Length: 422
Image (tube, rainbow, N blue to C red):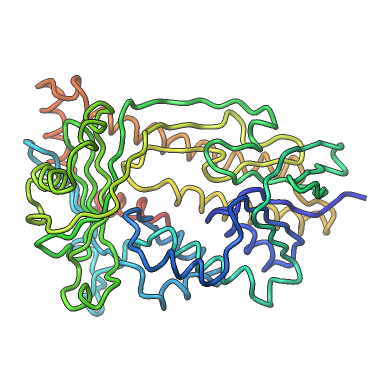
């Protein structure tokens, strides 16, 4: 008899979301999270600090989080910053793109439509951690934290995998799901090769307090050195709430050598250079916190599936942060895979769970879309950043393109819809 137990390796947002989705459908699932086990006090300590990083959650991702009973916890926490506009402009060029402006208002009450919400990673992870422990999913869901998978053995199509943890525990699963990030152990053990692209860029990430409020607008400047994103952050202190909408999350893309040099500067110097790079779009920067950096690469697994095994999220694909869509693509993976698993299980009369044809259908649905997004972001980065992008014919092409696109309202609405993921 086929083993219908599902094992998800990787307890981040994508893996935990899929575990909840399956448990709510009354499918037996085990979630392995290599990170240390945390209690509520540990979470509260982490939440007491503002995180410079933020996820730009699309409407599709928010709907998934609502469906699994997690968004409600995020909303009541007050640690989210909704945005109703996106603004994209280029330095020393003409044409500005604005999504979600007055044309996207709700006709009934003239209120701007929500485009998405900026939420710190810890806030999402804490809400998922709370939800994973609730009674309605406990009968179907087992969570193992603080343990790493050290061995994966395939035992045939009927039995699937036997996975061994570092404490010696062995777990059998008919379906193994790799959600363990860009360096995926699951992907490597399955012998799935990876296509990679190194942008030779580094992103500087930080949180800043600006003189002007963000006005629920996500901003992105296309600079010759790379993109500069200014994303709304939630107001978390009493002082913040008395003077709201002045904190932003920054992702500043620079050539690697420039980023390394900048990181050696004092925080005040970095803040002043950042304000100047944004052409003081939100005025001077009064505070800067949590300065960090990470190299920028894109990658795509050459296959998302193998016998009894499937990859989701960053284990399958990773994109340039230019449009903030990395996590959203992973959440779309969750929706597509969970739907296909349930659809084929019902169609087979409850006999096929995680069959190869099911996994291949998921791959056909998601891999081309993810590839398109990855290459589109790479093309945009190439079009705006680097020496070639500064050639006058390319500048003229960009100027004309942005100017024309900004005037075509149906196209702008289509772009906004694509960004929302719905």
